[in-house]
Image (cartoon, rainbow, N blue to C red; front, top):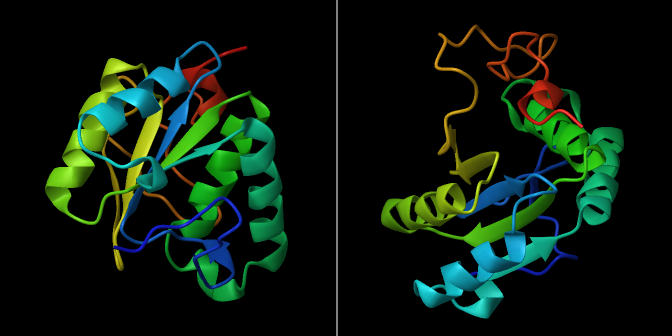
Length: 164
C-alpha cells in the first residue's frame, strides 16, 4: 500500500498528481471532518485519508502553477490544479484518499456525496475521472489548456458552484 502525507508531492510534469488517490473538495459549510470519519468507518485507515486545509491546498497549487512544465498543459492536470486553487481561495477544504481500486473510489464518492462535497476526482495513471458530476446536467464543452476545465456552470467558472 502506498500512502502519502501532506508534505508528499507525487507529480507529473511539475504538478500534483496523486495516482491511485481521490481528491475531494468540500465547501466551507460542508463537514469534511465527518466525511473523513465516515471514510474511516467504511474501511479506510487513518493514514489513507489526508486532510488539507484551504491554506495548504492553496500553497500547494501555487507551487504547482509556478513549477508546471509545458507538458502539464497537454492533459487536464494543470487545469485541475487551477480549479483546486480557486476552490481553496473560496475556503474549500480537501481530502486526498488512497483509493487504488475502482470500488474504493466509488466508496469515497458515495461518502463524499453524503457529506455535500463539491468535487471528487479519481487520479489514474492516464485518466482523471470526475466522480461527482458538477453543474446542472448540461452538456460538457471541450476543455483545453487555454479554456481550462468546464465547470459546467452558466459562466464556466468554479466559483458559481458555491457562491460566497
